[in-house]
Structure formats: structure tokens, C-alpha cells
Image (tube, rainbow, N blue to C red; front, side, top):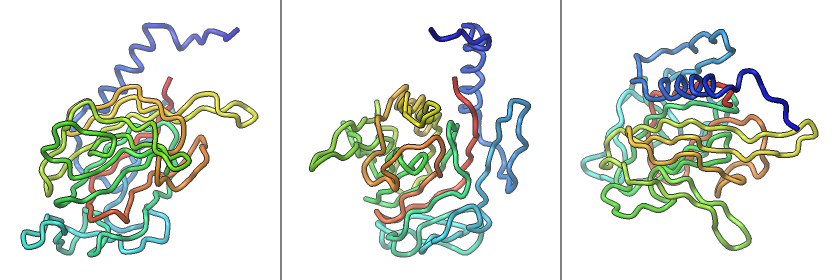
Length: 257
């Protein structure tokens, strides 16, 4: 028999989940180059610095910090950039290594802003294992798991399975900045290290539109860096599928019910 937790009364559960959703949907504030202080409950917000690559594990490949990134008007499949700070992009070729945060997360509330030029492709992997797809899906009528916002499929013996299409296509035009706001619940393990609960995307909000709710993933998705599952892992940005730029990445490290 499971012992009832005093913190898990229906009313308190409503308060906890309501607070998490309020945080997720709140508008982004100004950029900060320092992590915000931990709250009284031990939560901590990490704001990834866009001054340099110090927040990311080596190797960095062609990833670089720039001051401006736009879809190149002369070559719309490419990005044109200007020197400065504030934006992370995967170099002039758009084909480089995947990038991993130094910080590792379990349960997390993430805000990520991204931009792709025409026809390009990337992805955000929570714990380096579970991908929310980034793709130029502008105008797609019936999105699949491989469109922007899709939770990518897993890969078995010569076959893909378990992909999750977004409920609606919320993608903007190529060259426009877009947002993901994600509540991710990490897999759970018992004292012996055996997995007892799958990872779950509690909510995925794309450009202000709810596209996933309470979607479980039974293991790492295709092209993940790790094939195992752990309580913690880094955020990974896919770097080898085409030009992409990122800015304003915030990770709120939390403990979800």
C-alpha cells in the first residue's frame, strides 16, 4: 500500500500545478546573464548565457555566438549573421556537432526561442534523449511527428514507432523567431535503479498554442545521444540537420508531482 503524502491533497495539487502553469505562460522578462536565485522550495532557474559558449560542453564545433541572425534573402535556405552577442547559431554550414548544456536537468520548465530558414531542421532533446522537433513546417495542413513541435519517433529494428504529432500546426514562417514552452517530467527510478515511470511531456506550448499534453515517451527518441535513461541529463540542441539559431533559453529546475 502506498502511504498518502500530506502534500498531495487535491487542493494542494491544484495549487502546485496552477503555479507551474502560471510560470510557464508568463511572458519572458529581460535577459539575464546570471542564474536566478533558488526559491525556498529548492527550485532554481538557469538562464543560458548568450555572451559566450561557457554554458555548453565541448566540443562546440562550428556553434558560435552572434548579435543578429536572419534568413539570408539571397539564399533563403541559409542564415545571415552579424557579430555581437545574444544569439547562438550552428555556424555557416549548418552542419556541425550536437551541443549539450553543462547543467543537467530532471524535471524542468523550459523556455526556448528558435529560428530556422527555409526547409531547415533541428531539435531540442530533453536530457539529451527525448526530442521535440524543430522544422520549417510553415503551411503544413496535417502535421506529423516530424513536423515542428512533434515529439519524435523512437527507432526499433528497421522501423520507427511511437512518434507524436502536434495537435495543430503552430509553426511560423521560416526566418521568424518562434517559442517552445515545455513542462517535462523526467523518468522515475526505484532504489535499485529500475525505471518505474516513463518520461512525460506534461505540456508543450508552441508559439502560445498547446500542442501536447501528458504525452509519455517509453524511451529515448530517434537520433538521441544516449540510449539509456537516467534521472538527470543535459539539454541537447541538434546541430547537424541544417541551419538554426537560438536565443533566450531558460531552464527552471523543479520537482513535479
